[in-house]
Each structure stands twice: as C-alpha cells, then as structure tokens.
Image 1 (spheres, rainbow, N blue to C red):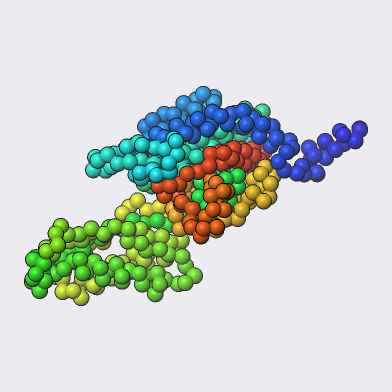
Image 2 (cartoon, rainbow, N blue to C red):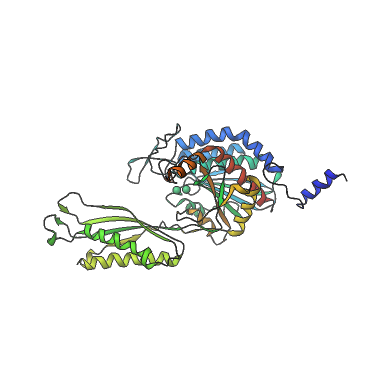
Length: 443
Ligand SMILES: [Zn+2]
Ligand SMILES: [Zn+2]
C-alpha cells in the first residue's frame, strides 16, 4: 500500500480528522451551493416582496411545494392549514425532519430595499393591513429550499429518510400544533431528529449560533377588561373611573417581576396595549389591556398569572367596585411553551457547523425571552430531540456602524430588519446540510 492510499484509509476510518472548510464532501457541497445560489437569491427576493400573514400563506406554501416537487420530493399540501410536507425515502437510516415557517407579520416595511414589501393582508376584522417578512421566515424558506436541493443532489452520500416541512402560522402560534394534530408524526415518517434555523438579527451574516437547553421562553397572551361606572368627566364622584384603575394596575403589575419573582428566574410582564374612552370629558365604562407574559418554568408562569388576577381584583375592590363589575382577566389558549434544545443533538449539529464553517464562525448564544411554536415538535409523547439554531443575518458594516454610534441594530419584528442575503443564505445551506448529512451518517 502506498502512502497516499494508507492516508486515505486512515481518513476513511476517522482516525485522521480532515480540517474544516476546504475538504471532502463539505467542499463539493460548497461548490454546488455556488451554482444554485443565483436561483435562491431570486427566490428570496420574491418571498420577501410577497409576504403573507399567519393562516393566509396560500401563495407562499404553493411556491414552497413547487420548489420541493421540482427538487424531486414527494409533496403533500394543506396539512394543518397551509402546511407543506416533502419526503424523500433514501434507504435504511435515521429520519431527519427540517422545518421552515412560512408566515409574515402585520408591519409596514421601512427597509428601503429595492425588493421591499408593499403587500397587504387581512386582519381578523377584515381590514387591509401591511405585511412584512420581519422575522426572517423568508430567509428560512430560501435556506430550506437550498438544503432540499443540496441533499437531493448528494443523495448518494447518505441513507435514511428526509422530511421537509413548511409550517404555517408560527407568529400566531398555531401552525405546529395544527400539523401535529393532522398526523405529521403518524401519517408521515416519524423523525428521530427535528432541526430548524431561526434568523438572528445581531449575529453577523456568515456566522451561526447555538444554545444548549433552554433557548426560547413560555409565551402567554392575557386580555384584561377593567370595568368601571361611566359618567360625566366633571362629576367623577358619581362614577368609578376605569382609566385611573387601569393606570394603577399597570404600575402594580411591574412589581410581579421586581418583587414577587426570584431574581434567578427570568420573567417578563409587558402591557402592550391599553385602550379606553372616547372623549376628553367622558368617564368610560371600561378599559381594555393586552399583555404578553414570558417565563421559563411552570411555577413562574402560574404565579405570574395568579398575581395578575389577584392585583386586578384587589385594586378594583379597593376602588369600591361592586362584585359584578370586577375586572375580567382571560389567559388566551394560544400558549406557547418554552423551547428546549436537546443538548446531545445540539452538540452534534454544532460540531458539524464548526467543521463546515470554521470554529470562529459558530457562537454560543444566550437564551432569549422570545417564543416559538417549534417547541411543540419536542413535546409529543415520542419526546423527539429537537434543536433550533441561530443563523446570523446582520451586515458586518452595519454592526461596526452601530457600535461606533452606540445605536441598536434593527431587531427581529422591526420594520427596518433587513437580512444580508449573501453570505447568510449560503451559510445556512452549507452548515445545515453538513449537519444533516452527519446525522444521517451517525457521526
Ligand atoms: Zn417572529
Ligand atoms: Zn420567527
């Protein structure tokens, strides 16, 4: 055996690890990605220009279904609303599921990009509202399409079953649950691993991030109706003013996190909406509040909800309201549980990322208080390991500018959030393809 063959044998047996970027299958994948990138960029701009709201993703899901069909996957549409599922059975091996979300947000885009959205969607009450891909789900879909093409192109390099899902209604939290209820894990191949990207507005494009364990929080939406007794603004003594009561409650709620929750337990109580009254000289009958609550444990979640109810009722009684006019506190049933990244799966995926992108492009990233219905995929009886990874999208020049000026970069859900398509999309395709190949090949 000559030296070259001997070295190849050692590499094949995994005795010598080839250093990252420029070698072996990662290199061939990288070259393939360069050839499909122009098409992916066109797809990205299209998805960015024509976003659709949650539960309204008709054209978006049709486009993703078409991309998967053209790539050679067996595609099923309309699973749990506008959900799309593509499957490739490619011999004996593990089943890996990759998820993208499809929906956008009711936000008027202000990025100034040549392909900015001018799209309109329908609000719940039937009004036209502006729509924007302000959470980067257009990046997710584009990268997902790139991964689909690449894993099909390299199907001789892996064995197993690939399940690709386009999930509707992430922003309103309902899509993951609906797809699971319609048999995602029973009528289609049940995955051994579930992975997804989420864009990250503060990580530079070209870098990715990972979080082991808790990554995203419990999310609750709460409606409060403060009821009073309306009357003339000049005669407050004959009324019970719900605006004063609502103001007291907003301030009292601030003490739930600061005075009632352990400093070692993350929690957020935000009053995001307050509406009451019609005129400067009329005391209204009621004021409506909308709150978002965030936490990482059942205990903090339950205590926060109990405190809100106690404070609302207690302040109303202190204001002298009769029992039949006490505030109504409703916790909506669209609860999103916290997302837990399986530690073993996350480490395996991260190791592949480091090999494909180089160590310095893979960052440990702290958990955040945003929420994701991706959590539901890990919460079925099957307890499937899931992991959501961060894909950096920020223009390094803008990061430097914001540091110099001491300003913040536009966050996710900002009307100015503008991911840098290249190298974000290429990075997402390369890193996740490498990771999924390793999962199939059990590295
Ligand atoms: Zn979002
Ligand atoms: Zn999102």
